[in-house]
Image 1 (cartoon, helix red, strand yellow):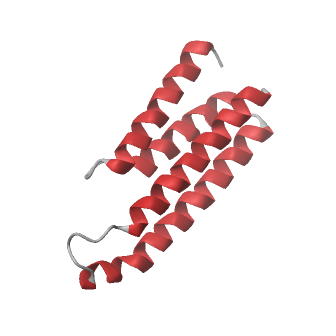
Image 2 (spheres, rainbow, N blue to C red; image 1 turned 180 degrees about the vertical axis):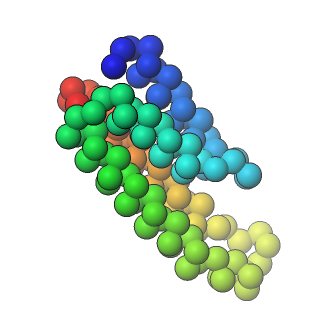
Image 3 (spheres, helix red, strand yellow; image 1 turned 120 degrees about the vertical axis):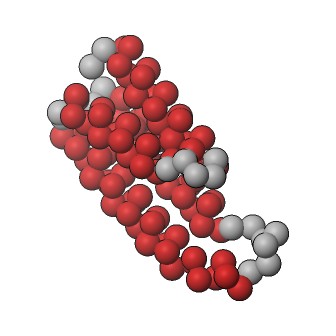
Length: 106
């Protein structure tokens, strides 16, 4: 995978991270799509491991978000939304795993 394509994948993932904190933008889906793009181009065991791990983590995060959603109805409108924090953390872990895999030469 060339340098320009790696930069584009990184920009897609950055857009996904920004999408997590922007209402209405599917940030985790964008981060996952960037990981999928890199994996389909790289086709190494490490790339597949990052994709599988990232997919599992983002699906687990979505389950946590769904479990915490009923608490939103009872909370005050100004209360902090804890599931936004978990989603951002999950996306950051996936992006960090991608960066580590790229640096290690995956």
